[in-house]
Length: 117
Length: 243
Image (cartoon, one colour):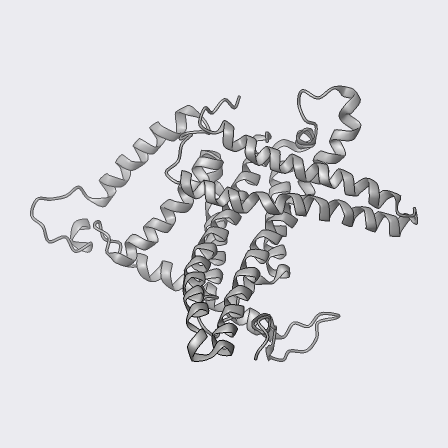
């Protein structure tokens, strides 16, 4: 009666959805449960990743500088300390931006070997 | 000739009384967000009502989008991240629908407004930070102490790490908004050339605009993908505590 609900017309009796679901669940548990977090180091979307990464990198630098200068400016207005905090935070923001880019590239280079602890 | 930036103008469709200092009128931006939500909901609900063992066209599309997001999450976060699948999937479908609907003539690109993308990015940022603190407590602060750095350099490195963490919502939102706005402006600029160059010279910008439209559809998809994949990466950082 389960089968008729899904409108099966074939006679060769495909497995019911419940059986399939149980098998899938079992297979997933075997694949994903045992090895921990990183199941597949190489995905099917590597070319997508490359193009996505190209769009990613550019804004990281700009965002770092903008956030650094913005925080410095806000602190300067609050504390009344001339332009100095803005200058300091501008450089630290640039460093943070470069760090972000470095990290994004590092992840890319490290992904295939999967040497994460 | 109309300005190429006119397409981004927010107009109030239904005027509502002000809520304190805020204008909460139902604008064309809100209308297209509603359309995006309705389109995604209709697509997912209608294509999964008749769950066949051998999927039809619509069911295949729904299953494809499920598999796409699920694989992305599994690759970047691992099985611990599947708990957050509903949120990630909603985020991806909402941005994708918003981007794609903005390609229709006379529609409105709400993802080309930084306040919208910044709101989305802020939800991700705050959520991910809360998840980090809930999962690891005070250990989450160790995320800002880079490993293998001499102690002398730590006073310099920790503020840089904190700043790098704070840039996340900004870079996330700027990327989506800037790409959408730049692409849509470009299309309008070239469309303006078609008219002003007339019947003789207008064919070259017309060809360019056709190419740009195709490119813009690619960008629409890719930016939704990038936004979601970065959300996954940030989620991974706060669940597994390493860069």
